[in-house]
Image 1 (spheres, helix red, strand yellow):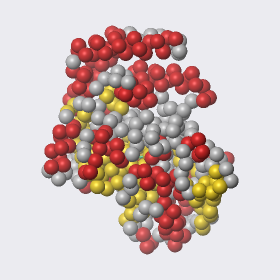
Image 2 (cartoon, rainbow, N blue to C red):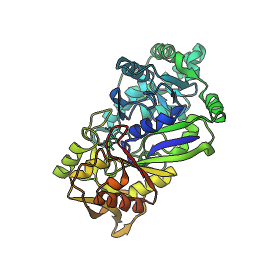
Image 3 (cartoon, rainbow, N blue to C red):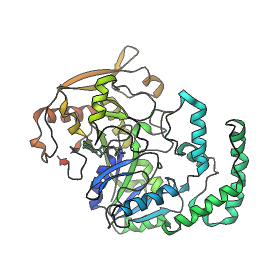
Image 4 (tube, rainbow, N blue to C red):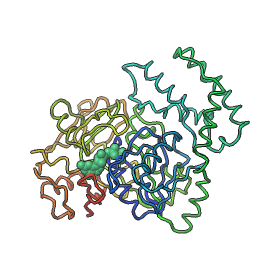
Length: 424
Ligand code: GDP
């Protein structure tokens, strides 16, 4: 059976924790898209970890962790991350990297930086990890597939082509030093040596695993609203963040994905630029940011303060819908315990008209939030394990949101740890 854990919002919904929790009963955990640009924070018996590229199953020795073909594979980051967890006492995890995954090159990262520099204030708020240049090259068919690392002739030939194409932009648009073929080939050979122990034919491994009835978890990065097709284009990421893409980015049949567990946060947060209708500012925002997540809403990769706002029913309902949600996990609810009243964005007003349909990005920029206020519960709900034990106002908030988004909330997360979960 395959289940996907994906985000309904802008990312940082707490997917890492939920994957780590569900992984206990899984045999295989797969990253199927994205790269080392986002972080998943996991708190467990070994400590607190921010993973950027490793699947969240690495803390269990019974799990095979897979980097699927859809991932932007940063080899030094992957190898460094494995070392960093092992150094902190985690047993050497089982890792497999798809021979069809493609490699993030140092020039992808440089190009990302050069472009952000060029755009100045109009930048997309990229994490500068080379993700957009990487995926552009993949689809322009000048990327390097892991399988190609083992063929010197291909490497020489393709590296020469890359220099021809990239150096025009690098020298004439960015006015930076040209790439050298020898450097690219050297980098690729280093990557080959580093990644060789992990490479395998993932698609065929998974074909057999499915036949054997193994439990498989697909771990999404970011959330629906960052999807290049269904999100707030162009303020999106460069690979699909939707569960459906799990089939492609891992190499499994789409009909095998039976459960789509969509993680939805009890308030909103976002990194980077782009429309954010329910965003709040000033002292009100500072307080939520400081109390948010586990130790404040600051990016796991960049440390940047995240933008924060109230729960957005319009965006979350849409976010759940495009994921094909079978159940919702409502996370970080404990953080809202300080509020007398909890504002919720229940609709948008666009050009004088109210709507609950999430619009395309150009219209979204003109949307204003329609806010309803619910009474707060004014207590700390951490440690509660039963739904009935939650304060009434807290249950009302959950049930209000559930009705508005139109998908069942099956689990509630009331703390960062593995055990901080309430099943309904
Ligand atoms: P991801 O990218 O979706 O995995 O999310 P992040 O890990 O970036 O952000 C979630 C943050 O919230 C992390 O610091 C988690 O430890 C923390 N977190 C997850 N679930 C909860 C929860 O229910 N309550 C609190 N207070 N923190 C949580």
